[in-house]
Image (tube, rainbow over all chains, first blue to last red; front, side, top):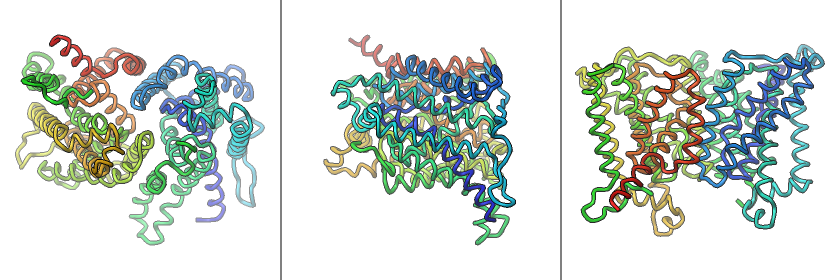
Length: 307
Length: 326
């Protein structure tokens, strides 16, 4: 366990945390404001990546691909909301789980039909390729820093949107008591649509940003979706601040756990059992963390007020 | 709502019991019908359906009667299956050992996780059971001595007290049948008992039940443990039926499929879970033969099911039966 490795893994953890935040932010709002479980949120992340690959193939420019893929993610999110989700807002959670599960099945298979089952890739834009020297003998890929930076930027923009604008005020009010907001004469259906489209676009953005360093393949959204759920449950449903803190926490714990579990266990175990037990414990860490948080605070670290 | 559990009216057998009786008669006769046609194939398919039906009934017990939507039930199935696999890998191949171990292991996992999960409500409960399911999944994936991601092959089906009762496909079929019947009878009795009424009372209004003087948490925990153990029973059978154990048994998609079976058949009816499991397995098989992209058909079907067929198949049966009786 050396210092450079620790720094690199901490940065990797931050990068995963930022990515999780981008996905969890939309999820927690949709959850908090509409009381709607959207399992298909991970699919929107996957679609963002696929759209980026497709538009990059058409235009040859990453920037154009980014803008077009964002618009496509937004349009697709709104289309899904219109076709399926808005009929489910009044239903119980079980119905929402099943219907959005159906959406996942359809779209995971759909991208296989449209783009093939084999993984695709997206090149890192030239301006950000290569690595940067953080300290002597320590290189770090620039693109990962770009992901961290853009995630922090989105967090700031979201904070300003939610705490300083009128729509943001309505969103916060909706997360506390949607029925009351509706009774006060706000068109709650339109608010739902805005939140939904915005969440879909954020998830798409996460998919676009991660596409250059991950293989783009069907089902890539499923694993990250579960992590995003862990994030919003730890953070408290409906809370953007909670989502940010929990996302960074999960990103760091997961990455550092995987890197150093074996080393730490070897301090008080023989090397061979440590190598067997280490990975198992590392993959359980975040779920144990979640269990611990929920045991102490059953509605997360920062529950939205009024729930 | 809960047809099977409705208080019996004078000299009327509840619709649910009639439906359940009909289902079990049909299932008992399947091996005879299978002899006429493609026997091995049909037998294996229905065995698989019955094994899932056990897990689906277990899930219906807590979802349908306790409103505890567990999204990690595949973990119990997986733990039961791994009990068989790991015991077989260390040379213990008798069901008299494997079955109790499978039940105990999954019940213990349910006890520990239930203790945490049941402190939460609603959406949080769904998510935390999902997370524990994933935890079991990743733990199984990192079990390098037992195949890790690839899973492990079980050399032969368990003997039963040294006898090869499960060795033939027909034998396995009837053992699965008997265990399914036992599972249904147990859950049916539980639901009709005082225990079941407390569980349902807590579903309607937890605070009121607590005010009346019941320790709701304890009842729900017991129900959760029973449900988990029955999931383990299903896993014990599936390891024996497929001679293979893998983390895929615990994937969250599998948990989702179990929920779909319960909803499709009709929530809170128990016999609906059997119908749901059979319909799900047969539909999956049929669509997969039809086209490689069967999921593109199945997905939208699920959405339509939710939007237009509330109460599932059992709901439909119940409505028709009530209408005929006037």
